[in-house]
Amino acid sequence: MSSRALPNPGWGPLSALPGNPLMWVLILSELLVFTAFFALYAWQRAADTALFDASQRELDPLMGGLNTLVLLTSGLCVALAVEATSAERIRRARQWLSASMGLGVGFCVIKVVEYADKLAAGLTPDTNAFFGFYYGLTAFHFAHVLFGLGLLALVSWRTSLDNVETAAAFWHLVDLIWILLYPLVYLLR
Image (cartoon, rainbow, N blue to C red; front, side, top):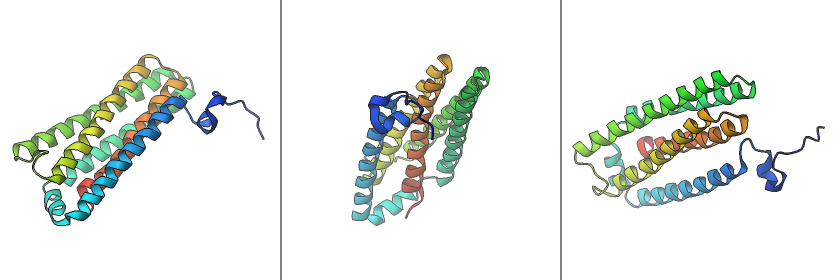
């Protein structure tokens, strides 16, 4: 059994995770916030299932599905960037990070097109409780995508294994939240 020293032994169990332990504190706190929002959504949905079902039919699950494919592919590119950085292939890592950022921007473009379509149809956050949640949850996730894109750009410039692992951990949070958000808002009836 190896007795490899942990990089940040003062962080307890977080010390063994890849990247900076502070990012894991942020990730855990964001998971708690999204969990609370998801629970509130489920509670409100249970209170008015007919309204939520009718409103949900106004969404395009194919657009949400396309966004899922784009974001998960972006997550794969980030994982490949970590692998390339670990192998000290910095140029390749930056290429994977650039691909991931391009896909992340693509996610944003698709989301903005979807928002524009809904707003043009008169479906605003004030339309009803469902659309309040739809815009609130997806906009909060969108803000996380933008923050994640900033992190990916930063680590493309300052490429080190610790930096890329830290940004990748956050980007995978963005993936995870969307994987939960997409079926909850677009598909489950």
